[in-house]
Length: 202
Image (cartoon, rainbow, N blue to C red):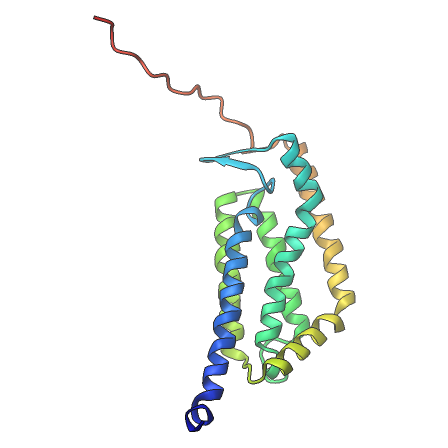
């Protein structure tokens, strides 16, 4: 009992941060490849991306959910981890939401110019941004952190709804420009596959 009285708070905070960072990292790891790919869900063969009609349909149907889900995970994690110290944090709720959406838009725009670079940004930037919040914020109570984080999310529902519309419009605009430009960098390679030469029959 004395042990828990002395170390309980530190162990609880350790568990909160470990669980939150683990979930955050796993979600970022799962989503950074589709986020950094021009046509989400396309199958990749080296530098080439091939999208069947079915995968194109999935892209049109689900890209707003993937992009917006990525935004919500990043913003939600940062709001949660900084919720007890919002008044003292360098980043308030609106700043966190705005920076998170700006990051999503930057990744999607970069994907139409350089996919591998966009994927690196989608992998590294959320973790770097999380580091800023971990340094400037503090979680002491799980219940208070969850309550404050949810309050910050729902309290900015109009801004979040606007961001959803923005991410859809920007994606469609990027796709239209990409198609009008003749899909630069997205055409299948015309280099013939190497053939295996059999040894002469003896």
